[in-house]
Length: 249
Image (cartoon, rainbow, N blue to C red; front, side):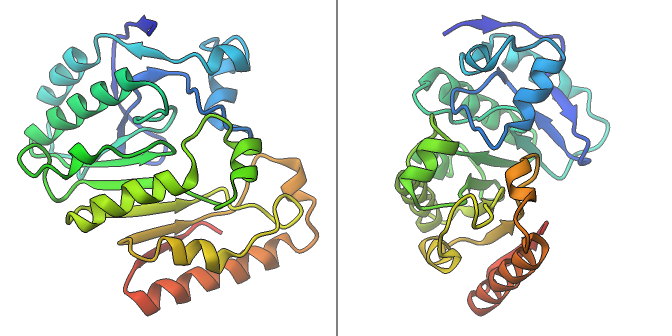
């Protein structure tokens, strides 16, 4: 796997929380479009879509993170993996190995992590000898359709495998999350939100959000009403099952 080096790794996102992005690029190649790719191309970190889909591991990630964690003046609530790449990128065991190493390093300082992936969460995360119970492990999931995945998330792990890996961690006592964003409008994909919710009804938290940065989603005439209705459905589903619910729609 190609590698790069960086001068810093631990950064505060525009959303206010600390995060690390220890890979440049993402082989999942999401076509929503991908905001991270757009920004990388704007700043010269990716020449084109093909270049973006050829990930490069930050070779000095562990050394950088150890130094930066040591300089923190206050203990953060958590550190997030990742905003501009995927910590468990499908088909890249080198990325998974580095992610597990970095999670362990962060946890060793008494800081929990939150994880979000379109890959397959590794079973090692359930090991209480290595990782504490206050870590949060999540998957991105907006459809159960493999046709949808092939069109919009061509390099990501199949939905059923994402859910299965997440459920195994939940059964092992881990805190679990499903991030349902960007949820498609009907002109992009006709689907049953109730069916999707039913497939992940075991989780501790669900976040639901609409589809942005796509002109076609904006053309749907009932867009605002559609998202209000779907957000209401998510809230009712979560309330009935004692699941924590957040919505950006």
